[in-house]
Length: 118
View 1 (cartoon, rainbow, N blue to C red):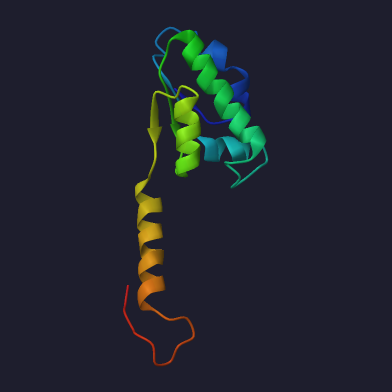
View 2 (cartoon, one colour):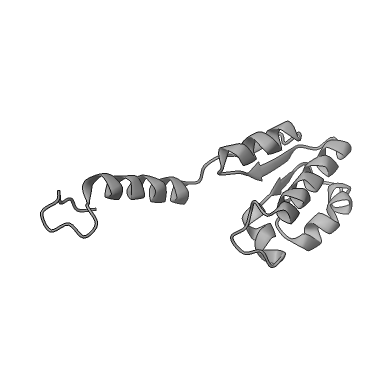
């Protein structure tokens, strides 16, 4: 079951008690958006909500997963008891690597700098 809204976090204990719910997965980005904090997955209120869901899962004896693309977040959520942590996503990995290549091979504003295509 995905926990991706403030309402889901508010009811996480009830969700975990539903017969057939074997695990939960917390999505901090969607959770942040539902809290009016679009793009602020590291906002203290979002982190607190994620930690609440992790604690509820642990108390219910059910695995809890979470997206955490920043290493410090992954470490925080693992230390808090997350059973599994997604530390990368295809689109984010592709975007960061593309940015790195652009930074290396294309000089911004340079007429004579190296040229590459991507």
